Length: 146
Image 1 (cartoon, rainbow, N blue to C red):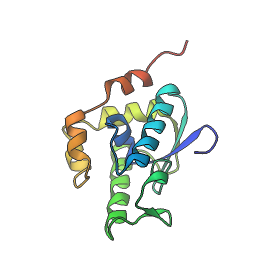
Image 2: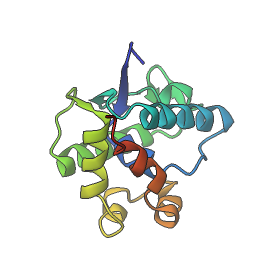
Image 3: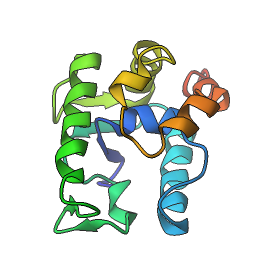
Image 4: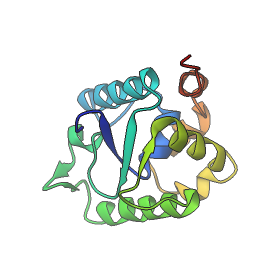
């Protein structure tokens, strides 16, 4: 995290609104929860969309040399996920957005009907399908700051 900007992988734009407080381990889950609450507290925080390890990946036990090393093919699969999400949301790598705008876009464009095809193969997909969009996250994103 640089100053008041978060670096977020494109596919994490789908994960954050569906976050159910789990993860690869407690450290990873705690970090993801911290990032989610940072966004909820400040919906206008800037988000830089990237296709490499981000502020969430920094606490992943599988990160090594700034890539995922869980399995030989996983890093390739993750990059493919990032590309699918960029295409679906019509976003460019390294673009910067207000969290509110980019997460509302994600919530509007990726729903229970198309998330299965976009996230096919993700170990967390069934949790996302079961939980759905975190309504309190969505509400916090769109709160008025008069």
